[in-house]
Length: 151
Image (cartoon, rainbow, N blue to C red):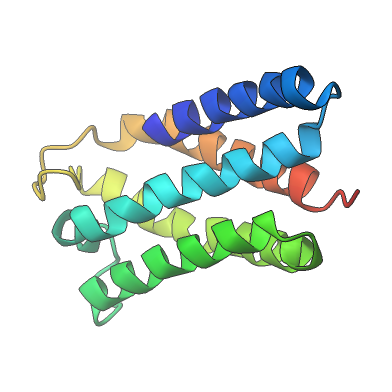
């Protein structure tokens, strides 16, 4: 749940910071930058915990570790794309697709009780999905709202 905390704390800091510094509420800016910060945070995990994250990928998919690195770089690209008004809509569309495509890996990881930080099968199990799936839907709705509203 760390990514959710990063997203919400960053949003609040930027939202109120914009009001204090610029004198106006800039929720679109705050929402997109907050998601970008969260993506950079989660991208770091793809490199730091690549061994454990590769355990999340379903068995039939080859080159698991390379895929984890690739998705980490993709998260960095999405973060940059959300910060540029001309690329924001495309980045938002692709990020929503990305969130939908990685959900099966999260489900697979929960079914196998993967603890990606320690690269073991001692994780939280399927009960984690009661938190993960709504959180993933929240991320998708966040990106749809903030990333598709152009100012």
